[in-house]
Length: 465
Image (cartoon, rainbow, N blue to C red; front, side):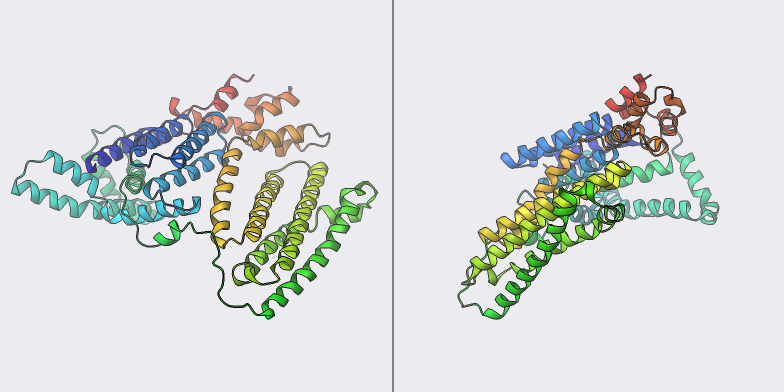
């Protein structure tokens, strides 16, 4: 088993070395993810959760191949971290715990970086005293040498005087291994980084720190054996009554002026409704979620008048959902007047996540669940939202929306990534893709790329006239 992990590590390290250096993420990331999942699968428990997570990781990898947006690549990396963290500790309770497990295991593995190399040498070397001594020296020296080389590269890059004084080391090193055609000091540092990450993936150090936090799946609150006093109950009741009354007035104004009579609103009022307050309302929703979590974290769930508190809390949640609707309308009107941007899309994504948060809090209050339930349920729900977002071509959506507008800011649309180019050419056939800066930069970068950087988006762009 030990040798199997070592072999898997070096297979992935070789693939990492040749797949990613000076390449764009595309087909290479898809193949590498498939290789990682295939080599870690034997260690995973064979159950529904494993197959579901593998399916999510594979689907996310497909989004990189087909859509190939920066946000899609980032989402794929996050999902792979979750799946690989689950491989290290299948008892994890949430997606966040899985990511933390992988991070901590990688940190713990730094002091064992020589282990995979020593495993290879132990299998190759005959049992002799001299070779055992050599092996022992190698075990001791691998980590110090790796760290020494890594920090030389960092200091040479950040300090030109240090680079000048130590250039002889680089030159001597290059002469020493000049027969290796793909060698360079930056690529060596790149490879060391990959080796550290892969060691954390394949060699499980059996975490003890934070183990209870990572594996605690208990979501139920324990009934109390004593009677709860009325002081806290009265405080929460008065707070929720006051907040409900206040939010009711805000929602009434929004519904009256924003939902149904927006056309009759004056320019000054419209500006205040749409431009001012959107982000403050977002903060209000976040604070509202925090208030409910604080109020219903423990003993109040078992008060004899809990039905009254539950009714007030559900009313508060319902009003916050109305508030989310108002923020969405404000954002929509903003887009209607000024066009679509990444920030305005971000507001919509936040509203979706906030709505999920309010729904899970509703369930927590009704079923008398603890904060751990919110942590677990929301982390998995948010990961599924990220999976869907990985297939969304945001720059194309922004370009399509804005280019239909008579007062479109064409320069802004042209400043978007290459994903906007087909839409630009569709609405402005007089333009040539060769004249768009993003295309020029893309073609300049593509000269150094191979088939490993292939993606469907690049292929479509090249075939677009």
